[in-house]
Image (cartoon, rainbow, N blue to C red; front, side, top):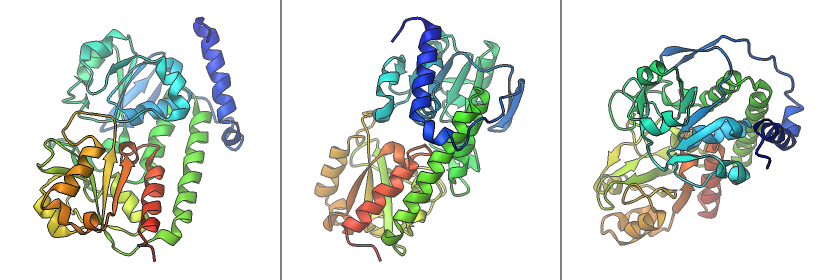
Length: 346
């Protein structure tokens, strides 16, 4: 690709247009953004005087939305990765600097010269952000945007991954796409992406009608700091809960915490019929590796006696499909396929 920035941007726009032509035709020519643009974001107002030229993305789900909107030429750095990027973005993503696999430093983010920092999680960028606070970035003239999926009906002041008070809805993911499209003045692309995802979601749910179950107990295991210690299990209102609700399954974990720590004696007492484990390339915690999770389930004297393990009803699902991301529909399809394979559908 040309080293000329203008030519490179033109080529990327052409490539994006070719990729999204079918959807754009149904949602073409949305009105351009009128600046200054002010939006409500995670309890505060954020104003944009113009479309950002440079953005740092903290969080894989956020990055994949920006790439889906054809904005790779604006992204100057990324961080917090769990899995390989979606295959269709391999080439573009390889040209973007990865600031860190996990949390980047404030200095590393600022060094790329962004006029916007977009974060997937409020605990990275927020009033008490571990990477930087709103005020820290604002003092340098850098705007900040946090995924509304991490704030809507969710309390992040409790520590950990926060407490979600209401069931996650995909509408909040579509809201994030529309807001980012407006911020960057690419509403046509935003409308096309939302239309494409809604169509996929409708088809996925319709296609699994034959895989619906009635209150089959399921648990989602993301990771554990120590392999034989308490495990991060999905609470009752997050993205995994949305997947289970779509299929008629029952989450055995009843807490509002997003990813509560649960002991294996407790899980054994709840005796799930299916265990969904997160697949990821991240190696931050002892149980990030799905192979280690499987080994533990098959050898631990308590976990190995859970019905899901004895019946070999263990499903590996990409970690991003368990998150409020554009991959959430993949999670519905993965669990539905497993339910059929296990012979548990009605």
